[in-house]
Image (cartoon, rainbow, N blue to C red):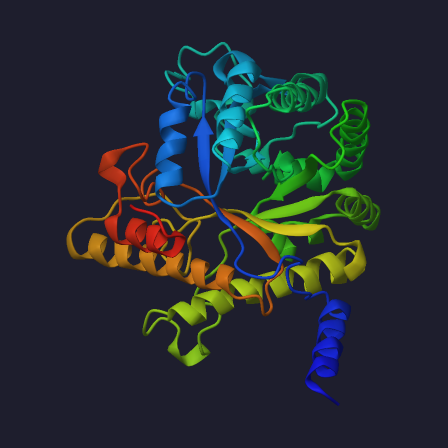
Length: 400
């Protein structure tokens, strides 16, 4: 059998196994996250210029919407849709690909929040992670107040560019995350997410956004851990979730799984993983998600899986073993060692994005806010990590 025939057979076997390579050969793009509350987009132009200068070809806007009660969102504390649209337009005019990723945010983290003075007495006001929120995605605030207005904003933004003869840029489809890390909401109400997708799909077509806006869902990394997510669902719930995922244009995960997972078992904990081992750990988690969760537990066929993205990546206080852990501070030699681990993790991500074999992710996005994650110090100069920033910029061909 000749080499071409062998390649075809191998590709077919990968497809059957649900491990087909990314549709677009070559390196997958790396984007930068842009979280923002009310007023957080005032300097969007300068911020986007810094991203472009560092080499990022894509940006994920993450508007924060405090969740203050059952199915209630505080829109007054979030960016307005017009200012969000202006920022999206600014990114598109700079030739950047765009993701819009609404976050329901714990109200306790809102600027100036004081639980002693709050008029909210329910448990939701003190919930520290959106994964525990019980929001109904078909509720008025979520569907009518958040998702449908976001689609309307995207229509207005794209219409402005369409009517501008001076704009000749080529735009890739905008990815809109219908939900972000809302674990319990999906576990207990998957059929309502399918209903939201149907409503959003209908509105997308009505607005003429078909093919220009991709409807996606960003799952937390707990989706990759069966006992945290899918194993908590009854059979009917799993079927509803499978139908929801099958209907999406794209699927993303916040990838905070163990980056030492590909090391030989006897060597874990005795040394840091190499860059190739970190890249292999990312491929391993991707394979496990497709094989064990999407196909095994949810029963989806390879051809039914939407395109895949890493919606969020970073390395926090927990280092390469527990990159999702962010609490706590370190100093001295321990801080230097952690900074090196964080840089190593980002080198591994870049290596993963450069290699087609075993990777189906079409893109990845860095989380760039908060201690350990704000590599460039764009949100707080004191949080900058020069080694990691330099590694990312070098990989992207930009400047830290």
